[in-house]
Image (cartoon, rainbow, N blue to C red; front, side, top):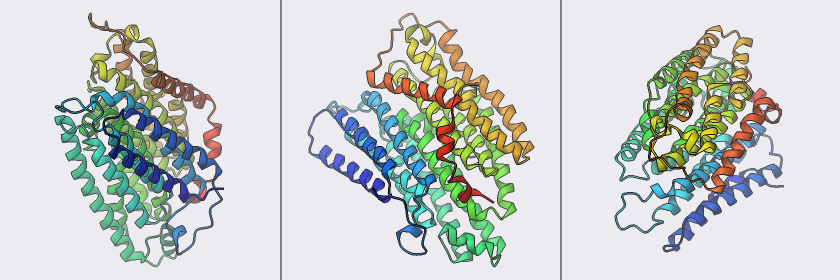
Length: 482
C-alpha cells in the first residue's frame, strides 16, 4: 500500500527529472517529453487506487495540514486526468510555440512547456488535501506561479504577454487578500487549521465582525481563482491570449481546485448566516454576467472564457446549497465537455483561427472534428443524455430541495442564454459554407483517440452517473454539512 503524500512527491520528482533531462538533451525531439510526462502521470493515477488508509487528523504534524479523505483522493485523480489531457493538447499545439522566434531550433522551449504542467498538477493535488490555511496558501502559490509562466509562455505574442501581465498582477493582488484574510481569521480564532477553527466557532467564543471581515477577504481571493463575479475581470483577456492548452488547464484544473478549497473553507464558517447571503449574491451576479456577456462574443476562446464564468455560477449554486456530490459531478462533466471543446480548438486554431467564423463549414471539411465540437457544445448547453444536462439537473435539484427559488429561476433563464451562444458554433460548422480554399484539417491518432474517449464519457456519464456519485457518497457529508 502507498501513503497518500507519495503521490504528490512522485509527481514532483518526475517533473524535476524531466527538467534535468531537458537541460542536457541538446536539439533532440522534445515531443517525447510530453509522452514521458503523460506516462509518468498515468502511473501515479494507477497508484492512487492503491493508497494506504490515512490516519485520523491530528492537532500536530503532517496530518494537521493534509487530508487523505475520499474527497481529496477523488480530486487528486481529477487533477491527474486533467493534466494528462492537457498534455495531449500540448502536443498538437507544439508547432505554435516557436512561431516568431528567429533562429530557434525546432524544439526550443517545448521541454519546459511539457514539464511545467506537472508541477501545476502537484500543486492542484496538494490543494485537494489542504485542511490548513498555511497548506492552502503554499499549494495555491505553487499552482499560481506555474500558471504565471504558462500563460505568457509565447511571450513574443502581444496577446500572450498582455494576458501574462494581467494574470500576474491580479493574481498577486488576490494572494494579498488571501494572506490578509487568513491573518484576521487567525487573530480572532488563534488557529489556522480548519477543524480547530470550526471548534472555536462552535463554542461561540469569538468576535463576529473581524471574523466576517477575514472570511470575506478569503472569499475575494478564492473568487478570483474560480472566476466568480466581481473578481472575473482577468478571464476573457487571459483566456484569449494564453496558449490554448493553458487556457483549458486554467478553465478546468484551476477552477476545480478552487472549488475544493472553497468547500473545505466554508465548512467551519457555515454557521455564519452572513456568509451564505454573500455567496447567494455572488452566485446571482456570476450567472447573469457570465451568460449575458457571452452572447455577443465572436472569438471562441473569449466565448469559452465567459462560459467558464457562467459555469462557476452553476457550481456556486451547489456550494450555496452545500451539495458536495452535485458540485463534484458537475466538475467532472465540466472537465469532459470543456477539454473536448479545447482539444478541437487547438487543432482547428493551428489551421484556421479562433474566431467562430473560422469554423464555417467544418462539418464538410473535417466531419469528426465538427462532431466532437458539436457534442462539447450541446453538453455545455445542457442537452439531455449528456453529462452537462445531468450536472445541471443535480445542481437545480439541490437548489429546489433547499428552497433556493431565486437561484433556480435565474439559473433556468441563463441556461436558455447558453443555448444561444453555444449553438452559434454549431450553426457555423453545419449551416455556413466553408471558404473556397478550405482543406481537411489533419488530426493525429492520439488526439482522435482522446476526443473519442471524451465523447464516449460525456454520453456514458450522461445516462449512468453512479460511478461518480458512489465515489462521492462518503466525502461530501463531513466536509460541507451544516
